[in-house]
Length: 414
Image 1 (cartoon, one colour):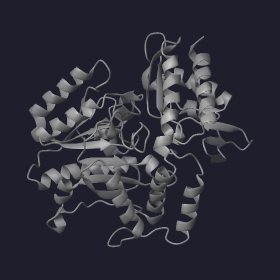
Image 2 (cartoon, one colour):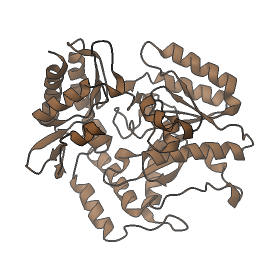
Image 3 (tube, rainbow, N blue to C red):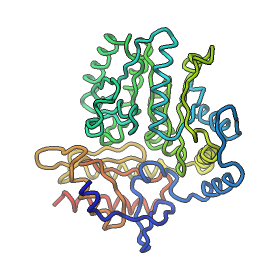
Image 4 (spheres, one colour):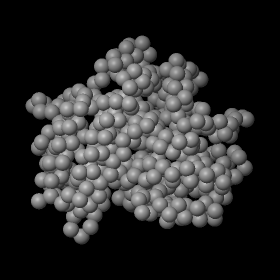
């Protein structure tokens, strides 16, 4: 906190497209889409118009014994786009609370299915699923968990299926489920990329194996698509890399509604049916603004922009540019490892004595260098990465990639 209080932050007065503007008129290319939210950039005219129109007609009504068009249409649209078998949507405020909902659904589902001992969860080492207490309980980034260890619920963390560690990771999960499935409510994973862990990517084959294991041992499978969804990794969902694989529950947030807080937990009919049969079986959970008309109307417009502007298709050549840049950094002085996936590129920096992890300082040197050059790049300790808007102009993307390369060289290449 002392360091934070002493810093001179970038003060943002306005934003448009892929650029942030300070009060002096200087612009910064937004290298992480404002924490992974602005996949369509800032101030997209259709999104701005949608909010202005909707707030003048129906800004909010409680989604409790009341229905409105936008929540119904958005639920239908999300379920149509989701992996097969996800047929119901529960709206909430953001990604963390979407995960909280999934946790509560899983535990209550098993209680009502005659398996009340199934209360434990399994997640990956390095997992990040949000900052609320339930979501933090699933997390595997120690620096986020340590202060709250006394109040977090029980979660077993298994090895991440990173490159060169797939067999060990799969064996550990297989052994755990075979031994403890009677006590496990669900396995929760971020499909194909673990964001806050340092942009760790892994092969989609793990999701296929995981689905088979969860089915065999009758454990629910939860995909957290808050970061990986909406085209960040290439297709609409990270899970789409494993064709034909569907979870029992899926959490959505961030890019779903880039101007307002909104999240959703999608569920299968199997899970939904577990809450039928009487008032005492209902999911007694809801947020004041869940499914609000303003947010759901905007989220619908986001999906229509994706379709009308062919956002995913037009992002593919941009992803190739990102991949080429990070591949060229491989082996550069001060760079330990690089990787890319869709509109994501990441590089681990190598301080003397090994990787400094989330609290490492090298990434912040890159941040300072990039800031001086006109880009906002927020590191994950000694991991630096880019996740720009999917529709960033080609010239601006080239400028961002150039700034990134120069900044890494200036910070750690000397």
